[in-house]
Length: 550
Image (cartoon, rainbow, N blue to C red; front, side, top):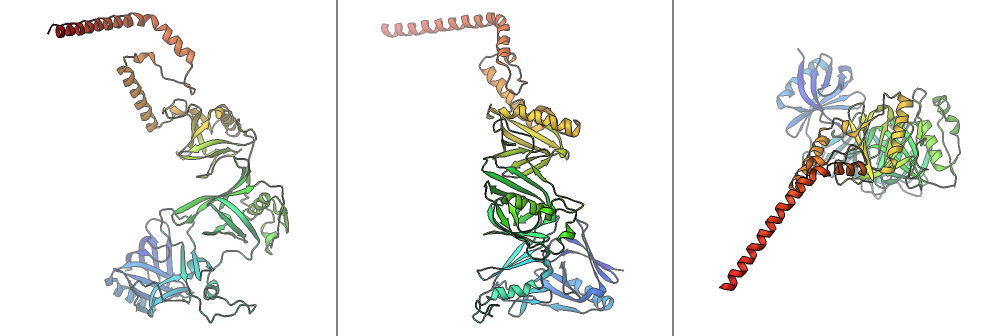
């Protein structure tokens, strides 16, 4: 009968718990919260190491290709059962290794097989599987940076190792470079050794170098280097590596200020830096009449790989033209495949009533001010947070027609879109002059593109929003209480059904129609007030007269 252990997967993505089964000819591990499965067959096992890590123990399975699979969370009594399985079933060596637990951060760093091992006083402190490393880089500060490959379905809550840095002090007896003039530093030499073990996903040599790309999100100026399969962004603080296949959408729109244009990349999965997720990259290009020239080093298989891709004929060295258009053309081709061509969405027929040359309107999401672009196929909000909603995913649109707060400016309005998945997104503080313009645009899109089955316009208050309804009820009750305290008639006010707050003429006519019925009651209340006032005067005169007599 095979034995099972409830343990965690070790290594870079440690923490996922699952069941490890000692099968007749393999180690089988199945995650509990996902479909992830790891199997190490007996013929691939080159050795098994047992070591203590804190309160529990770790099992390291060395494979014939030099890689290591780790499992954490074993108890001390599990050792004998695993040792017997390895020696009798797998016919492989089972050894115990002591790990340094002093916590020192200075030691020896070396490459052993397909592992990077950090040792202190001759004992292994920790190790890194080089198969998990996606990129290495030597810095001018005598450091080596290791960037780790990430799972494509990783979530923000998932903890994963993204980057490590090692400081390697420079030695006096460094080797000379190829030109025998500038000696190579210690970290550069070690980085060259690491690079031979790291599986690079660049897909060949450098294709093009784009300098001075100003990004609004993330906010920095990057040098972008294009390769066959990925492009790398090098900034003063952060570096990113993005696969072309992760670019889902590209959009080019003019900036709201009119001083340039935005190039937006929508990514799936998003970029991650620490706990920050970047769903989109937003690059800004200034308007200029000068043309740029970019020299390309196209890969040998370019013509075959992109044979039937639209726009391929534009990619030739050198490329000349407006910087924005050249960059857009490069990314469009390298991010496209025959079965999945990438289209660039641009400004369409919509024009603002306030700025007739712009396809956008002023807008805010909560406290974040920005611009809402209405393209022919989608909504785009810039700058923070950048959001894209395809029209085909919008079920209905709700305009605000009843004021819910006295703080809302009379010169603006809100509207909300309801998506097919049930989620809502609200856009606030839109100039009132754009109301009719938006209604006409949404109606035309709904009728011409979706036969009124999508993008349906409805009253804002007809949405099933309990919080909004509760807020509206509280406001109404507050007004009624205040009116009652002032002695006003509650029935004289009617709920305002129109967005503009109702018609002043209709309100005055209602007051005139009720004037006759209110005259008697108002005159009666006035006479009572006069009697009370006369009585108060007589009482004061009587008090003065008594004082004089005394």
